Image (cartoon, rainbow, N blue to C red):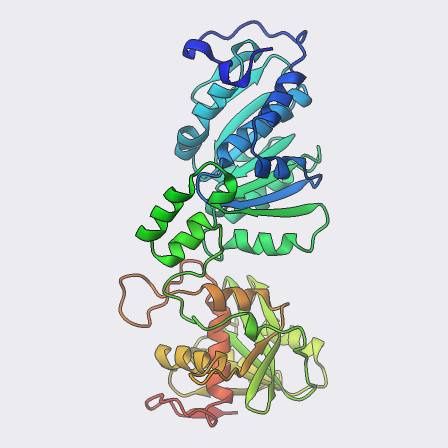
Length: 440
């Protein structure tokens, strides 16, 4: 049996595919792949869970581990289809194609496709490298196993809408391997994995990976800013730069937050793609957000009907987007504020839109004051609102208080801002120009 280091003498691998044959047992080679791993890499390999998430610092050996595991899967399951997926085709070719070609003995190959970045082994198994930039192009297959490399940079819908269903009929395993990229969807997946059966997570720093000497890490620490170093070398999920709500933290999140039974305060942002908002109670000079509204492809009428059915005997006080006094979404030309009043809800809104600056400052004041008082508490179930408070940023290069809306997560914090300005204006009289508050 050739050693892993001598698998491709003279660079002849894949030059001329040989005739496929199932006569040779390649299991010992799969064992050699395992033996070549570092201790931390073996920890990931050995865990029995079907779904594994590895977040590591730079130069951990992520790609080597990816390809080694895919090759072993292909050997262990003849006739299987095994995919490596990363953010785009170019990255797949640059990062993993050379690694794949250098890892497998030439005798194991039946054929290759350079354009499609795929190889077929002598036992009929296929290993293919894919880019996820066009997720729809990945549809229509049944996968035996999957590794998503640099998963934090792969689009969420590629996993949820395409790759996850492709694993269902065979029940194949999936690994997600990446360096962090802020508090994005991979971070959400990481947190959800803590509570899911058959999911597990691993985190290793660059030094723990064992492939980079300590003095090199020390040199990087001297030349990088603290946040970048923690993310790239310590595998830390770092908050984004330019956060709109920089002081929001776990101190604001509490499972003890409950509906107190009084008036239901509903802060809402009118939007076509998703009707978003928060449901809260006022407790003294604090606000307790105990639930959120998330209804996709909906309208004001539908959401009001839902709330009326859910809370038939409660007084609901709405703090909507001020533009709803003119925005007409019903067939009869009724305004959003008119619809809210028709359902018997109180509707509190200024005659003119709140200034964006006031909405942001008032929310930050509730999150944490300069003397460290916290007046905003939120239940962990309000995942969209929490994600927005952690991740909404200012648009780079724009004027002050211009929010980056690319991710589409700001709707929940907008609704929260309307609520805070409307319900707590007497507690903290933020200046809003001529925007007097009207109550119906």
